[in-house]
Length: 171
Length: 209
Image (cartoon, rainbow over all chains, first blue to last red):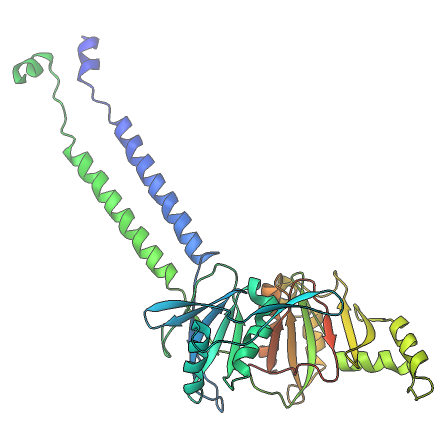
């Protein structure tokens, strides 16, 4: 009699265990991805805010990592190597990278020409990575020397940055 | 088959409701997952974007290094450094330069020394590694940095930050404190370990906020 009763019992416990495992795994993945998005992996979306009397120029966002400039354009990002950079040895023996002649045909030359043409309305906004701190002053001088206004802001290594339109979302 | 089940008295339950429940749960979780990622990924920072411009205010300097920020009046320090050396004359120039090279001033957690390079005076200010305050310490209402800024007038002075690559957090926090107190600010990146150097013909300390 008891044998028959055992056979009739259908145990749902394994299925609940499967359900719980699935739920747990999904929750884990969700939390990991969310924490990465909010924490170290969170990107920055910059929205211009102008104060009274500040010129309302349009920023052209350029990421600088020390060797290559990443120019943000509508719908794409262009890599622009630092054309003309050369290492110079100072009297104390230290070596520094300085800007040299920039060819008009090079990507940097074309970027500079483009910004020079629009310098009344646009300016170069640099997002400077820690890796680019050492050479930034020399690199940005290439723009200053041509009368292009510059602005710069530090951004952590690997953190995505983008420019949002004025009046965009607020956090 | 049907007959045999009846004979044993066992009715096999349908697994369809369970599969249904499982699918619903997974679907809801995936939906939450996508929503969370999209929401978190769109985090934005509303900020007044920097634009470099010359400053008509006298700057004081904040050194940001090793995740610590420390403010000081570099011009007052240089003045104090030069005071005991007196004015050089044509006859005393050589000994004056020798004395200048040997002379050290230690004050407010920084060391000042100088040399003659590129035909001009070059002052170097080296903050002590343990001086200054971390980002958390800067947030406190009674922080030394707030006290330091409290002694200055935003109408007369602007704040200029020299930032090393290992000090982004303390820099951001110190700049927020300076904004709160109404100061104009500017900053310049330095390579790791690079000391703060000042010379009469050096690069101008600009503002960008």
